[in-house]
Image (cartoon, rainbow over all chains, first blue to last red):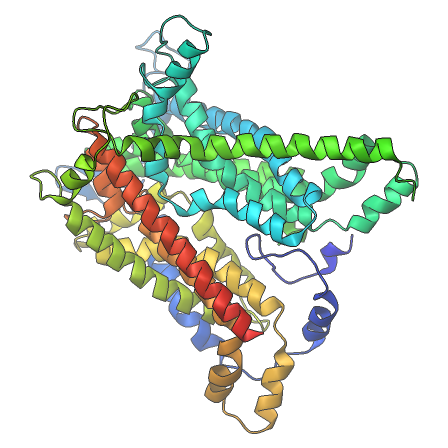
Length: 328
Length: 275
C-alpha cells in the first residue's frame, strides 16, 4: 500500500481526496524546511495551555482518587477505600448481602454504558457506511460530493443539546411519530413506547452521532484509487469480490477512526439520557455527576478513572483490529 | 470497454437506490429539527406537540421579554464572548503548532498525541478533573477562566488538523525564495505564508467558534455562578417544557447555520484570492 509510506499526519478532517495536486505536493515535500520561526516559541503557548487544562486535570483525577473524604472536602491520603467501594458495594465479596459474587452496582452501570455504546456504534456503522459509500464511490463530481457531504456534516456544527430537544415533539404520546402511525392505521391508539424509553434513547443517540462516523469513513473511501477498481473489474471480479478484497479493507481505517470517535463520546454521554430518557437511566457519566454533586470528589474520581480505563481498553482493542497509523 | 446497456441500467438503478437512501438519511438527521422549527411558531394556546393551534410569534416574544427564571440574554452574551475568544486562540495556536510541525523536533510525537487526546477525552472527565483541582487549590471556577481553558482543549485538535492539512500541501520554496532575497522571518510570514494559509486559519476559527458556542459537557462543572447558553438550555429542561424552548432552539440553530454560511462565504472569498 502506497499510503503507508507517507509519514506525515494528514489528519482525518482536513484530508482531501488525492487530485492533480499530488505531483506538486510530493515535490514540495521533498524540500527540506530550514528557516522559519523557532519551534520552541511556536509550541510553548499551546503546550503550556494543554499542560494546565488537559494533563493537570487528568493527573488530578488520579491523585484525588486515593484521597480520603472528610467533612471539609478531601485530605491527602493513599487509601484504596474508594476503589474497594466501587467494586464491592452491593455485590462482589459482600457477605452481608445475598448478592455475593455479583458485580457491584457501579460495575454494572459501567458495563451497561459500554454495552449501550457498542449497540449505538453498530447502528451508526450499519446506517452510516452506505452513506459514506454513496458519497465516496457513487457520486462522481467533486462539487456534488462535497455539497452532499457538507449537508451531512452541518448538524455537527449546531447545538447538540438542541438536537436532542428536537426529539421531544417527535416522540411523545401525542408526538409526530404516533400521529403518523395512527393516521396510517398501523396502530389504533397512540403508543407510549417512544418518549422516555430505551428505544427513543437509542434512536436519538444514533441520530446525534451517526454524522460523526460518516466523516472519517467518507474520507477513507474517497481516497481509494479508482484505477484499482477498474483493473479488478477488467480482470473479471464481481462487485462483491471488489468490495471484499479492495474497498472493504481500504476503508477499514476510516471505519475504525469513526468508531473510536463515537465510542469515546458515547462513553462520556450524560446529557441525552436526561433529555430523551427523562433521567431514568444512569450512565457512567451521570454517576460521576451525582457524586460530584454530593461533593464526594474522591469517589467521583474513581468512577472517572474506571470510565477512562475502559475507554482506553476499547480504543486499544479497535486499534488492534485495525491499524490506523497508516491513515494519520 | 464492455459498457453494455443492461450493465449501465443496473448501475443507474443502484445509484438511484443509494440516492433514495441518502434522502431518507437526511430526513432522519434533519426531521426532528424541522418539526421543532415548525412547532416554535405554535399559537398562543398550543402545546409542545402537533397539531398546531394557530400560528404566532408568541413564544419568540416570550423568549425576548425579561423573565424571572434564568438569564437568557446574559447567557447568550457570555456564550458569544467565550466563542469569540476560543475562536481567536484556536486559530492562533493551531497555526503556530502546525508551523512547528513542519519540522521534525524532539517530542513531536508526544505533543501530537497530547493535542489529539483533547478530542478523545470525554468532556465530563476534564470538567470533573479541573473542577476538583480548582476547588482544592481554592480558585473559583468561572466560564471565562476554567471554561475557556477546556473549550480550547476541545477545539484545538480540529483547528490543528485543518492547519496540518493546509501546510501539507504548502510549497515551502516560496518562503525560501523570499528568504534568499533577504526578507526577515516576520516579513516572510506576513507577505508569503499568511496570505496563502488564511483560508485554513478561517476554517480553524470556524471550528473554534461553533464548537465552543455549542459546548455543554465541558462547561457543565466549570462555568461557576454564571451560565453559558447551552447550560441555560439544559437548566430549562428541568422545568415544564414549553414551546419557548423550541423557539430558543430554532433561534440558536438559525444563528449557527448563518454563521457557517458566513464562514463558508469568507472562506471561498479568501480561497479564490489566495490562488
